[in-house]
Amino acid sequence: MPNNATVLIVDDEKPITDAYAQWLEDDYSVRTAYSGSEALEKLDEEVNVVLLDRRMPDLSGEDVLDEIHEQELTCRVALVSAVEPDFDILELGFDAYLEKPVSDPDELLETVEKLLRRTTYDTQIQQFLSLANKKAALETKKSDEELRASDEYAQLTDELAQLRAELSNTATELDDEDLRAEFQGSDADRGSDE
Image (cartoon, rainbow, N blue to C red; front, side, top):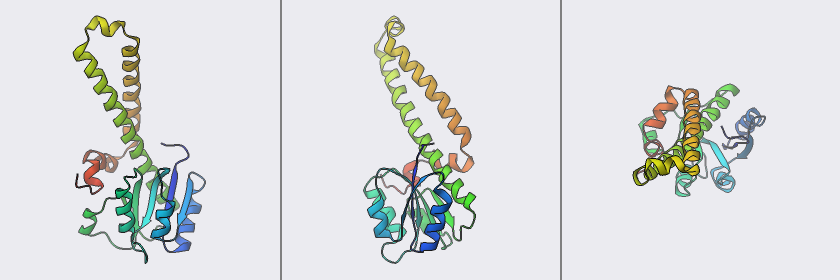
């Protein structure tokens, strides 16, 4: 999981935002926003996870979600809402849904950790696929002798083996819900039409 991960907490109810911040600040760098428009001001590439209230007076959580996708930010988003989830959530591009009141600090911490594990897995799988494609390209054009003689190819093979082990370790940390989310396709999970 990313060390020094940054979590942005967005809720128009200041006591809720401040409580969440207090629960998470020992483990993460925390930013707080008390409105959707303030959230957009504090949102950048450094934010790894957003805990986002769905209903806010100025800009809703859905508006903030739209902006996150428009800016192509890679942060994971947990919607936090008193609204019971209904089929309309299928249109929203978020990664987790928490129903208010969230009164257990461990539940909030576990949600953030789960989203960070997913991010780690995504990054590792992208690196692995990139290296595997390079290896396959070399293997189709180079002879076995050339491959055996190449220090770069040996290093690539070692990197792939190391990444495979890291992926295996990360995958064991993911629970069934995480794996379902990852293998159903991140574009579909995030509400992308691409």
